[in-house]
Image (cartoon, rainbow over all chains, first blue to last red; front, side, top):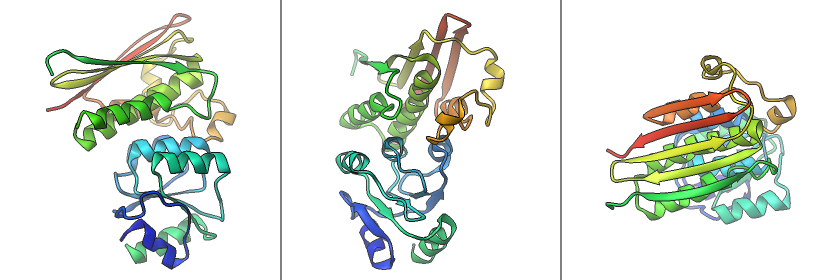
Length: 107
Length: 141
């Protein structure tokens, strides 16, 4: 499914510069090196981390989108950075596990 | 491409939150060269891990990325404290990072293992009190 379609299923887009990107699988984790070591390209990355480094890791790992859980959002600075780097970031009030279950039903 | 292409970066050790700029820059440059996306992914992740290590442990350093016809080589050089036990540092999960760094999502003890995972060759030269040089090679063919 396309990243932008997540919006119809309870995920709110914070940035969506590349909404047509296809989601292929997912990886859940908050430790950045684990994400870089294990996440596949085009995966959706589910995390509670929202600092600047998340934008860099998302670019380098080439994930299709970042899904912030537990209602976490981005501050304006990181939002601008994600936008500039072409990173899709969505948020949901669901905890990470429930968000992963929901995503699994969709993709 | 007969002459190797060399990109040089100074890694700023003072600004931890924006660390990774050199790697993102490398990624962009390699993409412009038209390299395979998976190769670019491996190079930029290996370099980012090294860059983060230089910022966490060595107050920055220098990075050179050399692109030849058959490989991308990354040379990361710092004048930090050196690595006391390289074998231990290569183990997944072993880290000497502080808890404040861990709260940013780093310090999982996966940096060097990831660098090895994503490169075809890796060599670490380190001397306590002098610094560390890491060389990584990712073959293009």
